[in-house]
Length: 148
Image 1: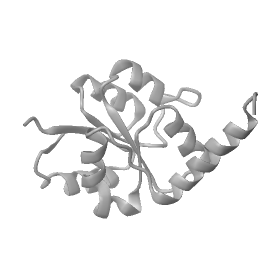
Image 2 (image 1 turned 135 degrees about the vertical axis):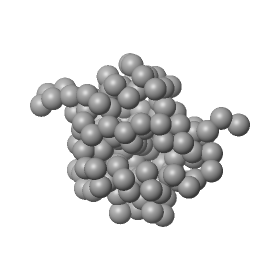
Image 3 (image 1 turned 180 degrees about the horizontal axis):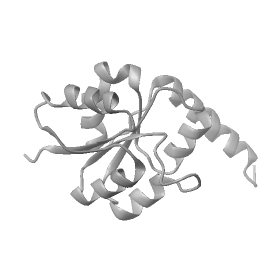
Image 4 (image 1 turned 90 degrees about the horizontal axis):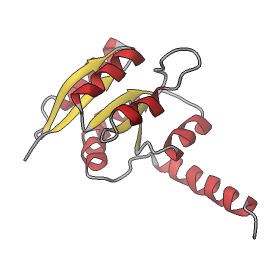
């Protein structure tokens, strides 16, 4: 069985090192690259990783979103967003645009390997409290839709 290939893209070297330290001993998972900014993250997609661990704050400049470009350049790569804290709206927006996973850094030790495996298998990974917010957002959208 081929290993799950992973690229770690985070502006903080300590955060990249933590992910690497947690994933290195995991059987069936291989880190194939690292990136410290949005441009390097985009370049690393040429490696065609199955999973991209992406710092939510990375971009290609002040007004250029990184996620749509990554999806165009490497459509087979599944993204798991990593964050310390972010607005619910920003996370929900990313999930609504096809990001299958979101993980808070404080949960890395407990859930990183599991999240990588499940997202690679086609499942989503979001914290429980985010699921409730997603349901509320869908409900609000449904209630606003014409024909209701």
